[in-house]
Each structure stands twice: as structure tokens, then as C-alpha cells.
Length: 482
Image (cartoon, rainbow, N blue to C red; front, side):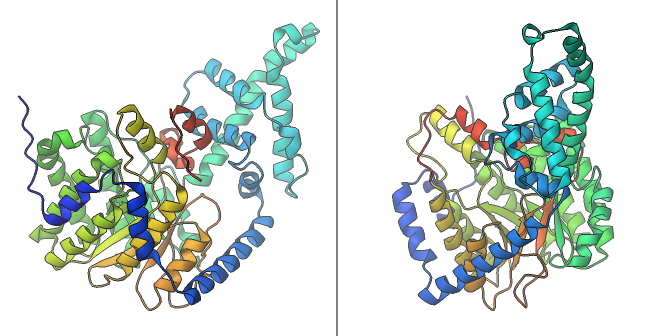
């Protein structure tokens, strides 16, 4: 009844498939061997990590405005989670009645008083007072009102409260979104470029559900590549700004079951984007997707790398997630792919973006294992082991290490002495441990991943995947992820 024309598996591709839900203990044991460092390397990595953390903390104590607000109301507090819930959802709610109910729900129960006078920032203390008063107003219902005057104040205060919270949420949105358009984002990034930063632009958007969605996102990518390319003025893929492409945003049926359709419809459009990137000599990374889409992304990647029209273009990139048990095998395959086609690929190594969802889906489907590691420490080990793999293949790949973990950075700097690579950070997600002025000598400038777009399109993961604590309530059996 159904016929799926999947390509024949090579040994390296078969290894990827076989490791999908590999036994975690066996996988970690293999990773431990590859991640081993000498005592001298470990000590140097720890010392560098301490120095970076000290510098970051010193900078945070002097921060004001939104930076100070984010520090006071962090995601480790219920109040911080409540604010992030509002920041993610409020601007997308169309009617005022629902907005008022959301504000009341998220603010009325918060212990805002505990945040008063903790920060030297006048802005933060004013915000705490405002949230405290708002919480008291929204927590008061009609039965508790003792007079008509109180009811009048409550009713009249709702629009004022809504306006104030809307403004605060837009302010928080600017912490993560660099501009409403790619042109605005490029302009806003000029000051940081002078400091030594480079950028990788991730266009805001969810996966496409209709062809109209896919067409709109595709036009956004075309316009963005033109804008970034013209602004880069021939700096090259390593020195200039680049962009990441989310494949599920530019095809409405991006799944393995639709392999033939994806290869026939998406591949030509994707090739056009990469030809534009080659024209401007800027880097384009294929962004990470959920685990069940990985091998489809690799099929597209192989078609692009082996295409004669893209020969010699060093800007073809791929994002690999270290929390997947298949990660080292994916890297082996990509290195081999580059060497077979006499290409050099950009490989961005990240920890992973869909952990909660991957765990939940595996449980819902009744599977006998997970595609990802269930403990954070296992992901950290995998990251270092995979980093060593990338650093050992300088002829085939240009490694891009995306992490805010100070020890991970310290370890990579020790393993990567004399090697060519770059560090990447996420704009708005905490303080970057390696600002251009702090990085060790002879290293490339750090690249910040920034997200231009309309605030109302912000996916939940834009805010560091908040509210993580709330989302984990959806997991039926929480794995032990210490």
C-alpha cells in the first residue's frame, strides 16, 4: 500500500541508525574514553573556567536595566518563571480579557516582596514594587472587596496594569530579539561588531504547517541572505556574519515518511539558498531538528555537499546535538562526506534543544529507550568527546562550539591549542563568558547567535526554552537527569 524509497545505507549511515536508542551506559563508556584529558589539561581547563566565571560575575554586578532585571528574576525562581511565561505568551494573545486573566494568574501568587532591595538597580526595585502592587490588586477578587471604591480601583486598574505589563514584556523581548527585521538586526549589531563579535542570524519562526507558511519563511530567508551578504561585503564565511536555516520551516511535511516529496520539493529550494550563500561567500548552517528528522536532514546535506554547483563553497554548515546518542556517528559521517567530496564543512556542536520533548515522545510511544541522554553530565561528556573528534579533522571541518558552560569552554581551549575553531554564544542567554576582550590570544572572534523577527512569532525555546520547570510536568516519568 505504501512505498518509501529510502537511499541505500552505507556503513557510516547504518552506524547512525543503529545508535538511535543505544544503551546509555554503553554509549557513555565509549564517550568517556574519547573525552579523556590529561591532569595538566584538566587543571588548566578548571583554572580558565574559574577566571571566566569570575569575570562574568563581576560584570553582572555592575549591570543595570534589563540585564539586572534578568539576574534578579532568574529562572531559578518561581517569579522568574512567571515573568518568562508572560514574556513568551502575552504578546500573542489577541483579546484583553484573556490577557488580564493571564496576568492575574502569573503575578498574583508571586512572592515579589522577597525581591525588593536585593539589587542596587533602581530599575529592578521599581519593577519589584510594581509587580508587588500588581500582584496584590490582581489577587483581590470581588468577594474580598470591602467597598465600591475598591471595586472601582480594581476595574479601572486592569487596563493600566495590562499596559504596564505589555511594555515590560516588550522590554524583555528586546533582550532576546535583536530587531523586527533583518536590516534592523544588522544595524543594531554594529556596536557589537566593533567590539569584535560576529553573528549567525536565526530567523524567528515555528515549523511550517501549510505551504503558505513555508513560502513566507522561504522568502524571509532569501531576503535575509541578500541583506547579510551585502552587509558582509566579501569578508568570507569565517570572518563575516552568517545565517541558520530551519528546514521544517520551509517545508510543511518535513518528515521521514515524506522522503520522496521532501527531496523533490525542498532540495531545489534549499540549493537556491546555498547558491545565494556561495554568491555572497557567507556561511549557512542547517539547523538542528527533532531526533526523528535527523537522517532526513543528512540526506539533504549529502545532496548539497556532492552537488557540483556548490563545489569549493566552504559555507555549508550543519548543526549537531551532543545530547543525541548518535552524535559521534553523525560527526564521523560528516567528516567522511567532506573528504569524499573535497569540501570543508562548518559543524556547529550544541548541547541540544528538544530534551523535554524527546523524552516525552519516547514515553508516549512506549519505546524501550531514548534518543537522547537522560542525564546532563552524560551530555557534557558527549560534548567533549565529539569536540575532540571535530578538532582532529581540521582538513574536513571548521568546528563551531556553541556553549555558555565555562568548564566546557576551558576544556575545548586546552584540546584545541593550535587548532582552528570558533566559539558561539546565544544572544540574550546570560552573559557570554568569552567576550572578545576576554578570549585567549590567537582565537577567532566569538559568534553570537541572534534572532531577528516579530516578537509575536517568538517560539517558547527563544527564551531558553522556558518555562522548563512547567514543561516537564508533561513528562509522565521523569528520568533521573542530575
